[in-house]
Image (cartoon, rainbow, N blue to C red; front, side):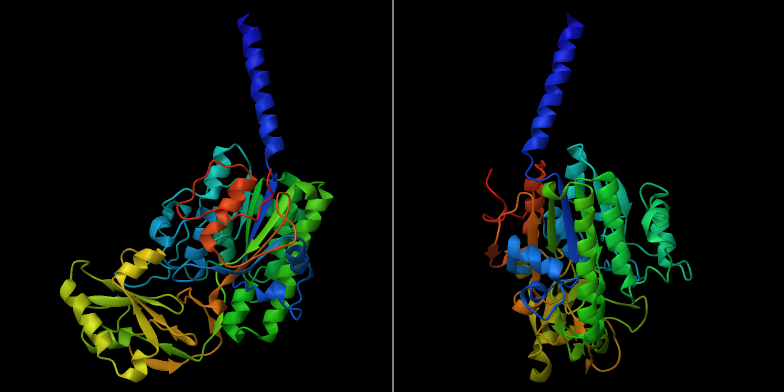
Length: 450
């Protein structure tokens, strides 16, 4: 009798699981972050992105996606994967502020994320995940993981660091044998577009072979060449072509695997891009006032600006040193107008409202065209070129984009601006995850009603 009861319970559990699987709007979500992604790439005819444009036309696209402050890669990607702002998720910049001087470390380890991620929710649901070159993913709860990481040890090489932290061991070697060929500093190099091809091939191979329920993929070429040449540089056009080709490879893999009708593509980014002509070095003003020294460890310092692209955040050696905080504010207020007009001071109350680093006393947000330098010597205002990001996310050029297409997505819909924190709820809904983001909401009109 007991055995019959247990068998009935087992059959019921299997039936419920099968029902849940059928009810999921999507079985496979491919979440692609295009670093430096701009809405123009799918809106304007001049950009070579046929796959992206077709998805935007047939699915859902946004005129813009508002980012976080600072609008740089690592806090932005952590917001995408958590639906939380940096204030809550704990990844405040690309590189953490280090009181004894910057060592070159970045926020690599997923254990630094202070809130649940989509990867956690996927694992908790008993589903499978894969991730490729995603920021802050070392040690993440991902079944097939090639994280973004490199070594500070001279001559060690970035590829070996990836091998050291891959999950499972031998995963990269499997892909080298099956699809990639030898991966090394020459064949997987951010200075060249072959990296985008291989990133796309990795995701395509895993989607076709292991059919994970969630793939997170980070493509970097658009960011790299916009930094180098600005928004409309010749190499930026080539980069968009390579990125679109990588997306096409993944789409074809879903088709070969017979799962295209059950797969959703969500293509977004971390920030837009702004052409720059000058850079400010606010630590020069602090050095002149004797609040820090022009040394790698900042010497005998009381205050320092931690720069992050086109923004700078004030940190105090003693967080309770109100006297120094007031002194810095007075320095900024007393600057000549030709400097003062180039930025605005973002006070702590506003930083709380936008969800920025809780340890910063204030931040400097420059006007478009001005970047920030960490230097504590030389001229406070200096020449710069190319493009950058990190700006306060309150103008069009710094917004990123969103294209969603495939299973569970509405057809031929255009949205106005949404927030970067609103991406995670889309994924959560499509995979029916038990996931409650801190800040993000599911915008009506993106997913189909069931």
